[in-house]
Length: 124
Image (cartoon, rainbow, N blue to C red):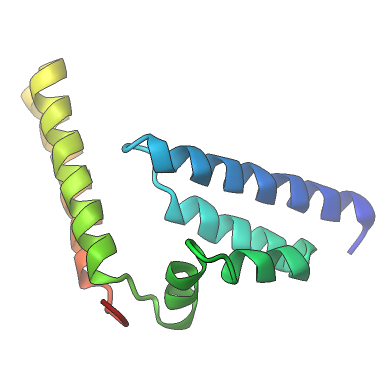
């Protein structure tokens, strides 16, 4: 891989790690998808950083579960669905959207929720 492409992938990987870390504190910004993308970018630019991410004491296990089996732990599912429901309720009651906008957002939240719940569980 040429050095400029490697630098771009590394920069994007670190940006995804940064967004993932911000997502820990902002409930509407997901953490795991950004870390999965960071792992993919690091896998193409720096095997050492990819290994660091998968060996991380907090984020490593969920990333390994997803990579190995597309699995999400029960606790993560409960947390995700709870935060999605809370976020949707906040959106609904705080912003007072039109029925059409509320229906579109509800459909998106429901589709994502069904996807999350349908993933296998490897561990508790």
